[in-house]
Image (cartoon, one colour):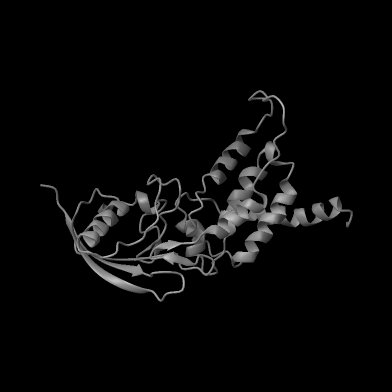
Length: 257
């Protein structure tokens, strides 16, 4: 018979953004080591519903480590103890029978709590909306190989595009900075030939929109350690470089240089 675990969960419960929150303790048993963390939460919520209690709100969608909505703090670490793993990909075999697991939402002023473990991450959407696009001329579709893309550029752009926008970088940063997220979204376009038309306006607009919501980067590096996709810190340096250039280039375009 498969070994199962009995666990103690200390889960942050908060009814709404303006309510006071608190930790509630739950005992849960018959947990398979092969369950994902979210499947374990499904069992918890089924037990709560069967007992006439309100289930814990925890966001999820794809459950494949793609959408990023499941992010939360597990024992003080963004997404939990396994590196390069989203919460939905974390398996209970990473814990031991009898463990106490503390689960709480992202703790960042820019991510206000909606309910329980669900936070409002719309500031990340505002950054993308401010400049995350490329010009697509109308007309017939060009041949796929019409614009040569160097392999190094394509590989780096792909690394940047792996960002799932979960917000772990912000939650892990002592300054609640969003430089890793923003630089990934900036550079996956800036590195490609197709992204050059708006490169400088995009960089300036996205960086300055980020600064409206988030703190400043002071090179702690916690963002990279917490990132489930291991976005390289190099992208922050690339974006800082592009931002300095954008201020001069955009000023010249406006005839102010």
